[in-house]
Length: 305
Image (cartoon, rainbow, N blue to C red; front, side, top):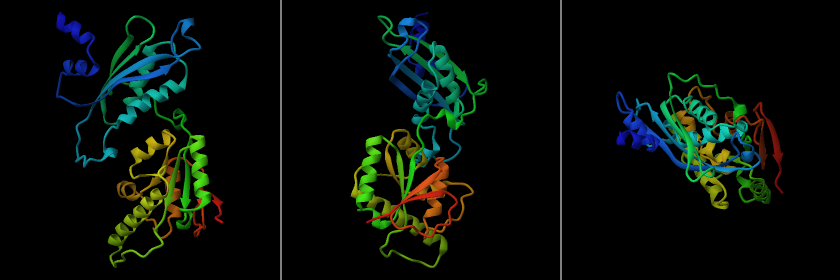
């Protein structure tokens, strides 16, 4: 009996381990994540926020391939915190039970997720923590489909920068404005102006070109510490949702993408358009000299000088 009482109040990770009936699964966990939330059925809970603590454990499928230390191949912790943020932004709720159910459903839309333990507790309603804990399985969950409307984050602004824009007043003013507004942005750069290695083999040259673009991205980052070089989709998603400015290093996403058009890396504009489409951006902003425009997306230009 004492063991049952212990487990009743144990962390969800211990609960998941104790209730394991078949093969042992890998787990990811979020512990003691506290958010100020307006929630509750009582009149005294309306119009003010209270501290709500989230503890979540997700059991995930074993990997069928090598992870290769690649964040895009795992169920990221960001997906867990994102599920909380999205559901809190949908509408005001009366019940923790409803919130827990929705968070569990959303997490279980991830293909790696097998089972999820969600514990939510109000920290300010009594002498102790008042809460609810639920367990949901992927096969038993009728999860809602995730739509773009659920994500209440602004679409990032996508910029293409010519090389002579790196040290320009126009770029500095642009970054200052983005920072003051808390607006996320992704800067795309092309090949450097300086000479770099050239070889005959097409595929080898393509990899060299990608490396040259990434070196150019780091060169831009050297001009302003607010520009952070990012290479994975997971990192870009996180930066966008947190209002940060990123410089896109495209090699990894291009090499991992399926059915990717064979971009001519000498003209980076179509590649910038592809990234804009990935994030649902309606236009590109060009700072500096306009390259040959063979894109279908709308382009706004900011001239230099």
